Length: 300
Ligand code: TA6
Image (tube, rainbow, N blue to C red; front, side, top):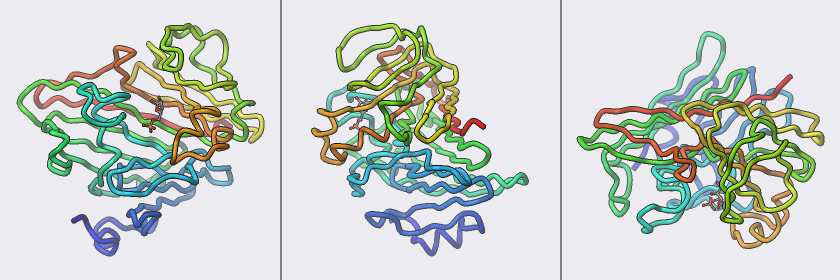
């Protein structure tokens, strides 16, 4: 059994970090400082919200999300690990087990510049045995500063080489998905998971149907140009050469029980991935370490 809220606040609480009971009684860390506010659930080390000072929320959350142990949260930033997409061994659902279990708070920190960070960790010992995890340690650090920085560190703590895939599966809030443009992936090859075919991105991405694409060979910055909110969301990353763009549009929205039929209008996912379809799986030797990072900010 993890720390109680009281124990968390005693052990890791600080003026800019408070632990409270969130939806479904999930323990949630509230980070707040001069740059804005962000919340992170211990369940899945799941960023649930990010609101820069004086701005509209940047991270989107479904009003139909489940908040149950063993279930993924719909919206925010699911941590997909150790597999992105279908389970390569066809035993479990998509996107791995890291988002289904509770993580432990390792530490919190306030930097001299006022940035606030929290680090959460997950090891193979904390994962239900049915997943047969190999020895590993994950640490997700969320830093609230001029940007929101989300960094997933992966350690192979075993004695044999392992391979994994994953993603920071971020849901962004937009005024109207049909009116935004996504730039930064022009001329990139992609795999279209809706059509089951390859393609090349021509110009900016517009959302006018179900979009589910895995872009290959990507390392640059994406931007969401949102005329409705009159803003540009800048999405940078490292430790990844694949980017996934997803909007379920009409039919898929209706098929998902934890997603409202009309919610596709106000969200789009841009994911910093290590996607198998883009030959971006990662291999770690014993003692090896790797990091996947996404940096989210509003452009002035
Ligand atoms: O990242 C895009 C995607 O893989 C889509 O295929 C879609 O299924 C989405 O993830 C959501 O997956 P989930 O398992 O959370 O329902």
